[in-house]
Image (cartoon, rainbow, N blue to C red):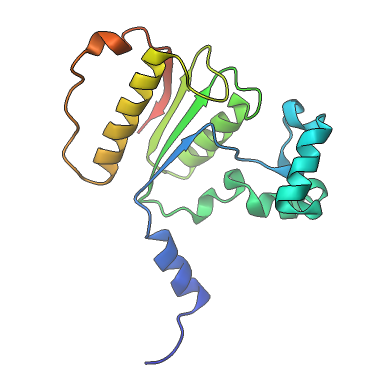
Length: 170
């Protein structure tokens, strides 16, 4: 018809583009809406946010929420699957951020899983945890994309000592 799609039509098209989201120690609340003491008292983080997102995000709650995934889950298509991963000792993106997203996603009926790894920080580094994590990611993506499941691990003993706790798996 030559008519440009409306913003609503473009939004629907955009939302339907994704089948799955994998968020590994992802920041979910930035600037003024981040209430974590790990960030609030750190002037370097405030300076970083000002440089990355602009000065309004550091001081304006509404501007910060507009950029923060925690406050935008309602824009995620309900058919999208969500896998959240956090290290329980992450000093940069505290575990409570992942918990908040998991709780909000569950409340909205979004399917997915929330995993945490004990004794891990802002990255999952211990070999049994790394192997366990990527095998979980592979299984998650195959299921979300309706692909055949990946093969079983050739050496399951390599992941026996992982420290993963599954907090939500739906």
